[in-house]
Amino acid sequence: MSLSNSFEQIGNQLFRYRGFVPVIFAVGAFFIQVQDSQERMSFGLCEEIALFLVFFGHLIRALTVGHRSMQTSGRNRSHQVAELLNTKGMYSIVRHPLYLANILIWIGWTTLLCIPWLIVVATFVFVVYYLFIMYAEEQFLRRKFGQDYERWQRRTPRLIPNPFLYASSSNDFSWRIVFKNEYPGWTASMTIALCIYSLLVNMSYPFSQYYQFYIKGWLLFGGGIALFGLTFRYLKHRTKLFHEMD
Image 1: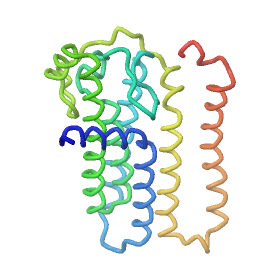
Image 2 (image 1 turned 90 degrees about the vertical axis):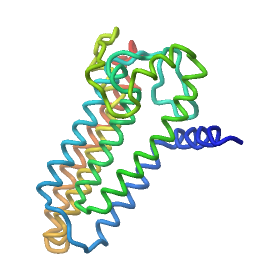
Image 3 (image 1 turned 60 degrees about the vertical axis):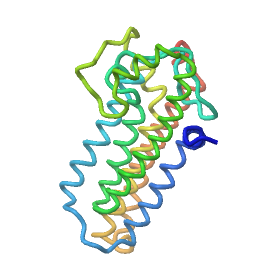
């Protein structure tokens, strides 16, 4: 088996489990935060950088998904799917805007833990992880769309956006499509934020002394996050609000 085929097979396997591997890393990072006693970076600086990266990542996802054609790849996990090569909007300035966004979001939440070596490791792991997935997706698109893909690939960077190449999308932007597809990611980010901030607060105010404060906080914010996620899940699967987008 050639090296190219090996990379593609690895990328396809990672593609199938792309929603789980980052979560495993996040859980590991969370426990490292609990155990690590080394000197940390300034929390104020980490928080600003982290929230900027997370917000910017979700913004890129919203701008990309909001113009998405239903004939391009969505949330399918078992295999690559695309009936149309999307080369406009965010795809005109970078070939993989959604993967770029995911990298920024995960690095952002890792940065909030304020452990320098863990931030470096997270950056390396997520960039390499998504590069394998990108490679497999590119091989699929090359076989599917041939010269059209080759022309787009030659002029469009893989991961570092070039805003000067921007070409407006032919699809109108729809917040309904954004909410339909992005509410799981927003729910996940809010949950991660709740866990990290609870841990950081516990380092200054032990749970055993302020358990009522923690219980009330978790009930309030955790309940709000759960209500947000369940409400949009209900709207998506039990109502006709998003049906015209299918």
